[in-house]
Image (cartoon, rainbow, N blue to C red; front, side):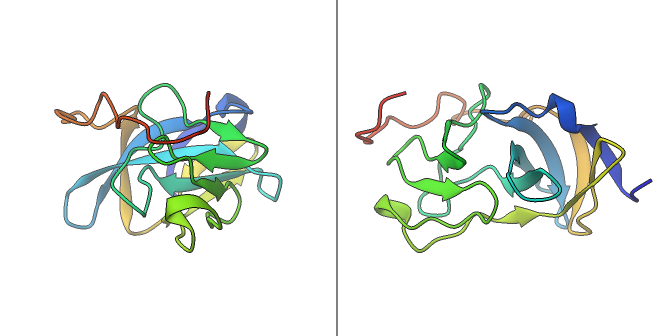
Length: 142
């Protein structure tokens, strides 16, 4: 079995959308992370739940918007490759999502990134102002 905290089973990660969970970083700050499907082994990737261009949560509690293997930022519509985390379009062009190391073994997805400690499934407990998410300036409709 992979060393690290079990997050979920790979079968529980939606084909479109994301699985949201919370970790604590080395400073004790809670961070949200999303698991998304990816066409490359091991079949899923984990990313910190923030657009690197401007603080915006990609998954605001209902799953990240995705289209054709890309995660869509709800603010400007920039699209990030679900496998590599790179963006080559829109306001976030040239940026990359922050990766969180995971392992998949026997269908179980585990957190193995030494920089984070698994806390719980779902969003951070202390989201006061950003639960409603950004107002969109994107031309992409969902």
